[in-house]
Structures are given as structure tokens and as C-alpha cells.
Image (cartoon, rainbow, N blue to C red; front, side, top):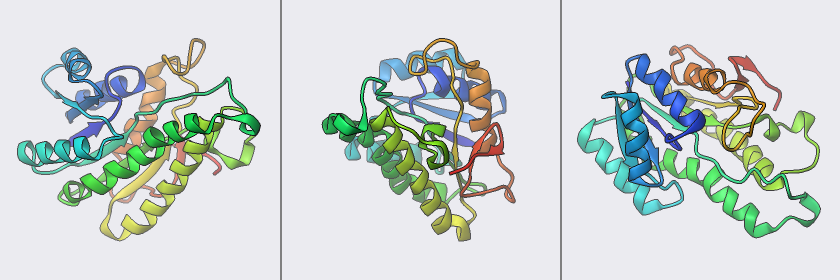
Length: 226
């Protein structure tokens, strides 16, 4: 299995890469700098291959797709993990909309762009999977105020997940959104659950059987309310 993980140089992304490598996957570990990706891949061993990927760049994304096509010929799973701007200092009523737009470029348009560019490679897989790493902050069921840039981008990512799942279901491409929970990472801060636990649900979605769910929102393999 050939699996690409965005934001793979630290935190949840790195742990997802580690768990997939342990399962025998060839892991394409990406970061915005090749140095960061290379350093992270060296921690995972020969199963990990570093790639420089800025998900906000169409040109860079297309170059990565071409490299994957040349080296591997297909992609089995895309894990859209990269995210920015957990804006605890903002409220929706007076949020800096430039910050909101910047968050959306990475958290929404980045995954959307990658799916569009990498879809031809996913279609060459016998068991294609797309995993969008989301957050319960994007669940309308229990939503309150705060973190408007992050929250709005995750709501939109959940909507994109549903659309892609509906459109790609006839091709057998499973698309799901995963909330890893509050995890003790640079973004999540101290006090959260172990990174190993947060990553496990993402790995679960990337390795679903062909009759597994699609178009769902899950944490630890259990459905969450939209």
C-alpha cells in the first residue's frame, strides 16, 4: 500500500506514518520543507519517503503527483492531516477574516486540491481511501462560539467529505472524516490524549475493508454527529 500523509513531520501525522509503516505501508511523508520531511522520515525507517509538499500550492501539488506517478505508479490512500490556526484568541463576531481565509487555504482548499490532483493515481489503486482529518469542533450538533477560523474550516471539510464520498462511492473510493480527539500535540497543547491513540482512528480509516463505511464522521472507529 502506498499512502501519502500531509503534515507528516510531527505530531499526529508522524505517528500515523509510524503506525502505517509498521503495517507494511510505503509512507510518503510530506512537510512544507524537504528538510523537515527528511528528518521525520529518517525516524520511521526505509518504509518512509520524504516529499516537500505545500498543500496551498497548485504547482507544488502537481509536481508531487508527477513524482508519485513516476516512482510508484499509483496511490492507495491519501491522508489529509495538515492543518493550521487553532485560533483560541478569536470570536466570530470580530474575527480577522484574513486569518479565516488563511486557515481555509490549508484546512479546506489544501485537501480539496490534493484530491483533485491525486485522484487519477487513487483510481489506479485496488483499494483507494481518502481520510480527511477533521475535528469535533466542526460538528454542528454541539457547536458553540470561539476558534472561528479553525471551526469554520473543519465544518467545510466535513461538507467536502460528504460530497466526495457521494461522488466517488460508485468507484469504490471510501472517503471519511476523522476526529482524533484532543491530542497532546503542538497544536492541541498539553493535557490531551496520547498521540498514539489519536492516530489510531486515522489509520483505521485508511485501512478499511472494501465494504467499510464511506461518507462518515468518526472518532476511534465510532460515528460522531455531524
